[in-house]
Amino acid sequence: MRKTSALNRILATMLDILIGGSFCLLMMIPTIVCLVNAIMTASQINIIALLISSFISGGLVIGVIFGYYVILPVHFNGQTFGKRFFSLKCQQNDGSEVTYKSMIIRVLLRVLVAFLSFGLSIIVDLITLICSKDHLTFYDTLASTIIVDVSDK
Image (cartoon, rainbow, N blue to C red; front, side):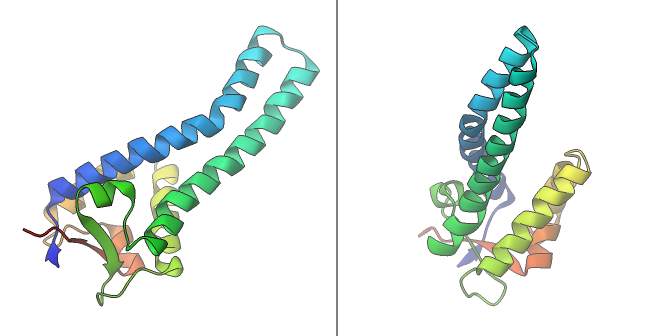
């Protein structure tokens, strides 16, 4: 197992965001339809339908994020589809497989900080990923995980 390059890690993350974002967008289609309907015809029933569909879509989006970024890596060798495509793997610092605890910490920190910083933390993540010798981000450090290259080079 070798350390990964920053470029491969960035590209894998971009692919994961594309895949995860696509699934999340699919889950939000009913809410988008209700929103357009509520804008075109502002009635009480349309507003209630928008509210209900928003809660349902929000729950589905949380489920997609949890499934893709937590369950998938725990059950598939520390890999999401993006990591698998770029021959990367997430593992514990000691070389063991990732656990639900470490992946939940990793995802919650990543999402919470990105949300609270209005997405600006992504720039900081990018800088620390490129500049750190092991290409780690703060959520890797706090979750005690590392990303390694598993290709046969």
